[in-house]
Amino acid sequence: MISKWLRMLKARLLPKLASKHKSLEPSSGKGIKLYWEEMNMGFTLKVEGSETIELGLDNIQTVTYDTDTPNDSNARSTDVGATLRITGKILTATDGDKSDDTMKLALWSLVPAEKADCYRKLTVEVISADQVVRQICFPNAFVVDYTETYGDTEGVGSFSLYVKQKKDKTELAQILGGY
Image (cartoon, rainbow, N blue to C red; front, side, top):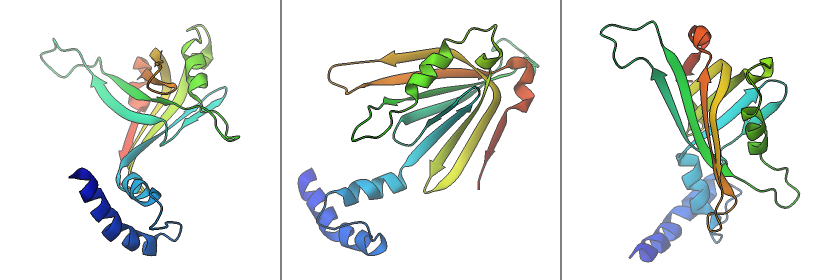
């Protein structure tokens, strides 16, 4: 049933897409994937410090923003924090491409608190239909947890990055969007 639906979708949709996207060929199976990626959400990550770390749409799978306040407070607390959890895939370099920057994330997670470089400017963009839905910027982000998981059936592996904005600088964190 699904394969019949996919054949029908390919026969009807790809010629229409090909007329709008000159690089698409209706006979190639790439059209459906390209259309899905254009309609689907994506994320970019940029970390600026002693070096620049950039991850894009191919790497990042989920982003979770959280405003962290004490749960036992009876009024709006002044103890407010901001966190981000970013998960994604570790990609290997192929065909002469450069490797992704997940290794740089791992090295950033090892920077000790005594060094100023443990705090870096982090910007995440949530993109949908070529528009930035949210841009979250932590000018003084630090790594709380970083995890890499490898398996023999999942490809290279996955990563999970948990960062916080420095608490005494929470007011400098920005959430922008709608442009």
